[in-house]
Length: 115
Image (cartoon, rainbow, N blue to C red; front, side, top):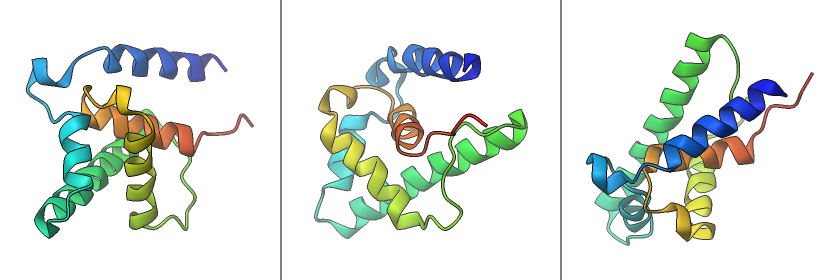
């Protein structure tokens, strides 16, 4: 339980940083790319989200613990859909760093159960 609250606190601190002030992609831009009808924009959206997922998985291996417990059979499109749905349902989170917002979407969709 302590780890869970630590992660929630860390995510809160990260979300407090505005993406525009740091020069990173914001959730506003990611949402725009993801909802665009242009194939290039959609490809950029998907690649970005999958890159964030790869980063989360790499961090988990480095930390030797799971932060997000995605099902083994989860395909890439479903993971992308989770992130896009989060952006659509949480417009107040869009001004923040897109990578953090995607990570929060995954954390909320696939929390690790205490064993």
